[in-house]
Amino acid sequence: MIEDDVAAKRFAVRVTRYGLLTLALLYTLYFAKSLLMLILVALLFTLLLSPLVALFKRFYIPRTLSAIFLLTMIGGPFTLLAIELAEPAQKWLTKVPEISAQLTEGLDSISQAISPDAAAENKQSLPAKEKSFSFFGLFDSDDEPVAEPEKNGEGSSALSARVMQGGIEIMVSVLGATPVVIAQFMTFVILVLFLLIFGPRLYESYVDIFLSENNNRPPVELVEKLQKELSRYIITVTLINTGLGIVTASVLWIMGVDDALLWGGLVGLLNFAPYVGPIIAIIILGLAGITQYGMELVSLIPAAVYFALNLLEAQFITPAVLGRHMRLNPLVLILWLLVWGWLWGPAGVLLAVPLLVCLKLVAAQLNILKDWVRLIETSA
Image 1 (cartoon, rainbow, N blue to C red):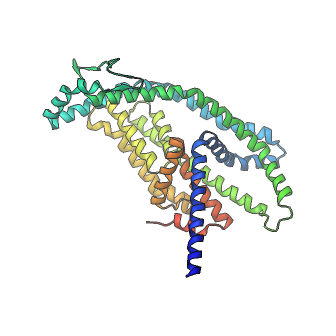
Image 2: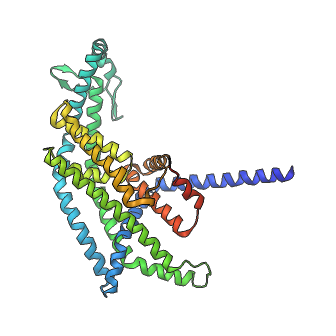
Image 3: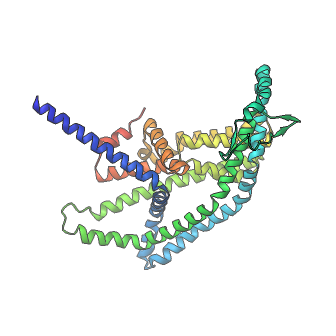
């Protein structure tokens, strides 16, 4: 009996300890996300280029020159693509209020067709509702009334006003974040350069200083194999998503969809987040179709084309190419996406799956956490 009590107390202490450790880790990840996210992206990008830098080193090309050359070769096309997409992206940002008005006009028409009495009651009660509306939380409409958007000479519904305001807020927040994004990009480039140039030598010094007399010193072959597996996975996923974006852009361009290159780049980026990314891409392409073709059945064609291409890629191409690397339980995957989306926002959703696969590969190569790896790979 005493032994059972002691075992129960030890179990409670262990659960409490791991619980506090988990909370501390989540706290750190959340409040240091701007720094940790930048470091994580730089590390993943370094994995892509490290094998090439090592190859150039065998031909007596200094790491500094090879790192700058590779970043220039990769950054050049991406810079040209960003310049090419800047104008259509800015155009669509300025169209956000117009898209919101067009979409909510269609929603109002549908709601009026379904329930005319409720729509009329909603229009009559609009001024009373507007009185309690606080614009950005700065002042009440009692002190500063909010102007009602006009639509065909009549006041629009509260839903239209709220959706249009939300579109304007999104546009302002994106434009306001541009300087921060540029600063983070420059920091990212500098960090990748330093990791490629000084990272390998720092690791070798760490092994020589701290692990030279340790019997459990990890073999260099194991580290090289791990790096090779991780870089192979990241390169493969990047090529698959790039191919999906190119094919999607080509098909949409042939169909005459406006700004097909922008949508191709967007779906290629969102495809790094399984389940969540394709759903967002379908919604965006649906809105783009409505904007170009109106509230007609033909407006669903861009989203339907992407859905078919994504289904082909997700069900056949990616499993055939990646094989066991992508054996991830869907429930574990969606929970992982939710956690990282809550911690780091949209960037966390994009980084969640590459991070999970990298952690799984590390555990498999180091022969640790075998039970957790088996649990993550559990199929439906």
